[in-house]
Image (tube, rainbow, N blue to C red; front, side, top):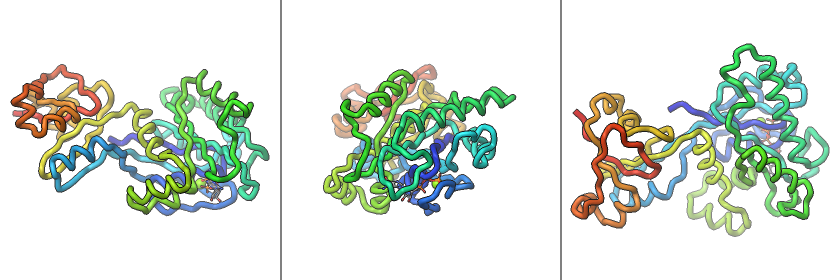
Length: 315
Ligand SMILES: Nc1nc2c(ncn2[C@@H]2O[C@H](COP(=O)(O)OP(=O)(O)OP(=O)(O)O)[C@@H](O)[C@H]2O)c(=O)[nH]1
Ligand SMILES: [Mg+2]
């Protein structure tokens, strides 16, 4: 499934830093605006402890996560919709993605240059969103509108540094949260720099470092929120050979889910045997779950649920 999330925002707010933290791909990170010109694409595993537990349960040789694609896009500035700062070219890169991770700077580090002099996330957000809307007005083809894409706001903070105060005592924070509420928008807070420094560590080491630095698990939350933003969810297959999370759109029927594994599974679908992942773990084995009557037989109309573990029977 080729659905991607574009990393969008003002220049020099940490988009490429975040992209590298996510994808572990080397990209140019630089303390000046418009460091990024050409978009970079990278595939990111969707963290899922349910899948890990299933893989351990089945003693699977392979544990295969779901994946989504992120695209590092150049920074946008005021006037981008009229071509400012190579605006038209950059906007066309945003047209190609399915959803937007909008990075906003909330750290005040005077050593890192910023397009607007002060930290005012709502002003920055509105500036970008206005450019997207203006670009839409100019577009003849109204099927791919920029402002209609689902957005996740990513607030980039600096742990241990000076940040916008994430409490009601900071007027800017109050206005920001109000804006998110009004627009029914989701947001996550990350420290792109720290996440990038930790990117090559093993999970356990990461957990320890995060604790030491007092940073939360922002980046995993970001990946999961992006996955949900794209309208995607996972079902599982599990066995000795592999445990795997398969990506489907929310609301998919059992045959549509089967098609994620093999296109044949859709037309040759007979039935699906289904159990929620945690129920399988509780039962202790597939055979035991069957004995207890916990494995359900579902037909063509069944709408797959997030976390279902499935065996397909096909002709
Ligand atoms: N202190 C601090 N610096 C950061 C953080 N995130 C990014 N930076 C720095 O900000 C500068 C810009 O980062 P980039 O990731 O290149 O920013 P960008 O948004 O991709 O910039 P353009 O591609 O030019 O639009 C670099 O010097 C980064 O090291 C952060 O969380 N804290
Ligand atoms: Mg960049």
